[in-house]
Length: 495
Image 1: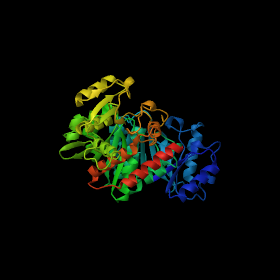
Image 2 (image 1 turned 30 degrees about the vertical axis):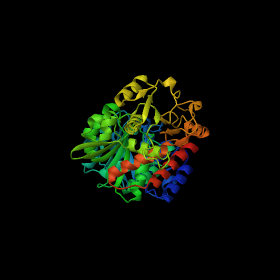
Image 3 (image 1 turned 45 degrees about the vertical axis):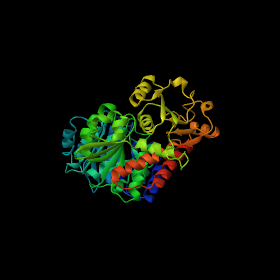
Image 4 (image 1 turned 120 degrees about the vertical axis):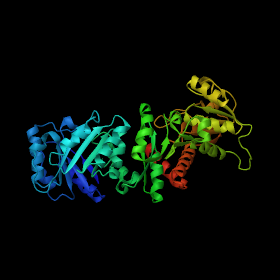
C-alpha cells in the first residue's frame, strides 16, 4: 500500500490535501504533524476525515521539524490514539511511554540518516519486543547491497516490516517493497515536496513503476549508472511492459564504480534481476564481468545490455546497431552500401563513441576520433585502427559524417555545442547522440546550415527497443517509446 505523506503548515491545507488525495485514489495518508505551525488541533484533522490516516510527529533528530518539548510531542501521539487515528508512528525509544489503546495500530520506527547499520537484524529483533503491529526501519543506503539487506529482512520476518533505504541509492527498496512483503511504502503527492531523502511522487509510484501491481512473481529489470537521476529508460521500458500486460518492472539502480563487481556478482542474483541496461560510467568496465560477450562487445570493448541466466551474465551492445540504423535514414534508400567511401568524425571516446566508431569502421568508413581527453582518443583510435585528431582541431578536416558522442549540449547545458557552426557544411550528415533535448544547439545549427540531421531520440528509441527484445523476446512499440520520450523531454524543456 502506498502511504502519501502530507507536510503542511496550516490545518486547512492538510484537510484539503487529504480530501484531494482520497479523490485520486490514495488509500492511506501520513499526517506529518511536526509541520503544523502552532498548536496541533487533532479533532479538526481526525473528525470526519475522508480516509485512513497515519499520525506522525517527527523530532528533528529523526529528520522531522518538531521543535517543541518532548513531553508535549508524546501527548500529541497519545491524543491521536484516543481520537482514533488508524495508525501512529512511535519511535523505538518512546514506545514504552505510549500505551496501546483502542483499534489504533502501532508502527514502531527507527531512523538512521547516516548508514544501514551492520546490526540492523538485532535492532529489528529488539523492536519486535515493543508491541508493534508494524516495525519500520528507515536507513541511509551507502551501497547497493544495503537495499538487499533491508528487503530480505522484511521478507523473512513474521512481524510486518517496513524496511526502506533513503537516498537515491535506496530507491529500489521503495519500489520493490511490494515484492518482498513490505506492508506500506511512503510517497509524496509531488516530486517537488519530498519529506525524506529519496521519496518518489505518488504518480510516479503508480503510473511509472506500477507499484500496486507488483507482487512476488514480478520480474525485475533495470538500468545501472552513477549518477542515475538523468536516465529515462524506466519510462520507456515500463510503458511497454504495461502496454503488453507483462508482470515486469524496470528500475533505476545507482551503482558507484567501486560497487559494480559486487552488484553484478552478488546483488543481481539476490534480487533475481533478469536483465540490465548499462550506461555511464560502466559500459566499458562491465565487460570484464561478462561471462558470455557477443561479437560486438568483444570488438567495441563496451556493453550496454546484460542478461542473466544459469551460465552467468551475457553481454550485448545495442548502441552500435541502433546508431547505424539511425544514420542509414539520412542516406538514399537505393544505396547498396551507403557508408562506403565515407569519412566520419566521431567526437568523444566513451562507450557510445566506441560503439559507433567500431560499427562505422566495420562498414568501410574512414573514421577520425577526437576527444576532449587526447589520451583516450589516441587509445580508441589505436584499438580500432582509426585516425585521431586533436580536440582543438576538430572540424577542420572535410568529412561526410559528424557524430557527437559526447554529452555536450545535454540538458541543462542546452546552449553548448561540441563544434563551431562554421565547420558545418551543407549536405553533410550531422548526428547528435544527445536525446534530451532532441533539438540540441548542434542540431539547430546543422539545420540552419542545410545539413542532413539525425537526432539522438531516434538512436535512443532504437537501442531501447533492441534491449527490450533481448529482455522479453517481444518487439515493443517504438511509437510508444518515442512518444513517451518526447513527452518527458518536452515537459522538462517547458519547466
